[in-house]
Length: 278
Ligand code: NAD
Image (cartoon, rainbow, N blue to C red; front, side):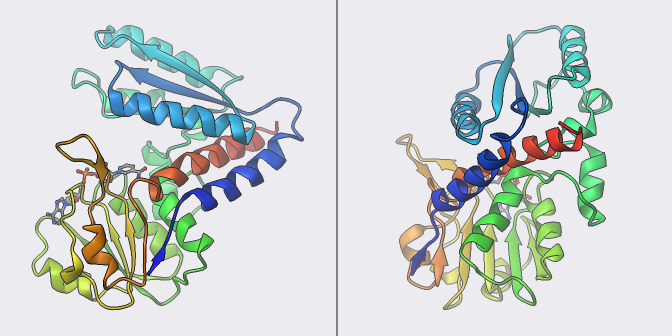
């Protein structure tokens, strides 16, 4: 079985971004916006900062206290969206319930929305137009491309239909001419549907729920899930040993899709700056 590590794909994308940023008059700038200090968010933030540095992208963090007033936050967030020095903004979600995502969306400049959070960019994606892609979903496509796994005409099955991963991923796979099935908690005969896949992508957020019985011989399996075991270690949606007995290729967790996400983010910050004519 081929292990599809994310790092080589991440390094390739980072090098391509770095080559371009090194020729620019000023580095593109990403603003990470965070409320509170969630451990997962901090860990992603650290990874993102390192990746931006390697890609030649300036990265700043605007952190707000967990109990920040909603109006104070909206005002500051709006100002960042207007700031000409800021090319891309990554807002960590989910936000505390007192914030209105509708209001935040109205304050978001779609041209700085480098993780494809707002309806304008999601609409562009669904219509097959140019624009920012949700970084994790795009990272799946980047891994498949890096390892030269063809998508045209292939039966792709996605387990998960969230707005952040499953749905946009289905659209990206369609744009690559795959024949796509999207499965979710109400899907009947999930195992049967999964077994039809030539490319199986798991984004359910259920630790090791997918074992070898879901996988036909020779399937390429991309595991998007990041789940924390009771002992604090990370695992994917796939039971690694069991799936690797059947799969032709599988991404590890950690070290798979997650490692490519921030390089996609870097590339989209570069694109945002270039679009502005920087
Ligand atoms: P989510 O909880 O919003 O969505 C999960 C989806 O999976 C839902 O659509 C649900 O219908 C489906 N699902 C859940 N249990 C199922 C089951 N038993 N059978 C069939 N379908 C089932 O999660 P999300 O935000 O889409 O994230 C999915 C996973 O990807 C999580 O583990 C998350 O941590 C991970 N993730 C990874 C990255 C990365 O960079 N690698 C980024 C974002 C999310």
